[in-house]
Length: 62
Image 1 (tube, helix red, strand yellow):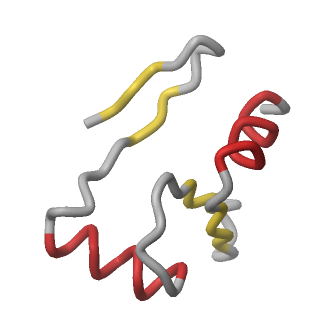
Image 2 (cartoon, rainbow, N blue to C red):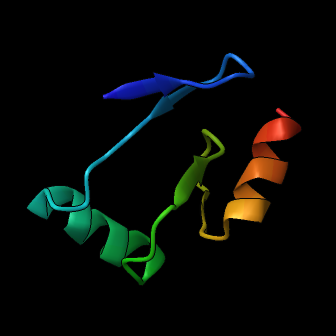
Image 3 (cartoon, rainbow, N blue to C red):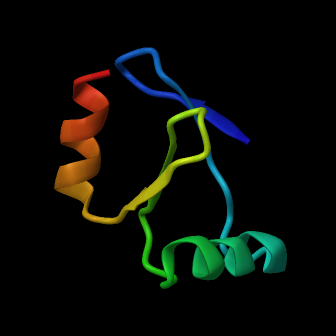
C-alpha cells in the first residue's frame, strides 16, 4: 500500500501485523516501534527513524 502525503511524496505503508513486515522491522531497526521511516540511500546504507517529529522534519526537507 502506498500513501501520497500533502508534500506529494510517494510513501509505502506496511502493516506490522503482517509477520514478514514485523520481522523486517525488528531485524532492521531493532524494535517494533511505529511510526517508523526506513530510509535507504540507494547505495546500501539504511537508517531507521522512529520519532514522529524527526520523521516529519526529515520528510519536509525532501
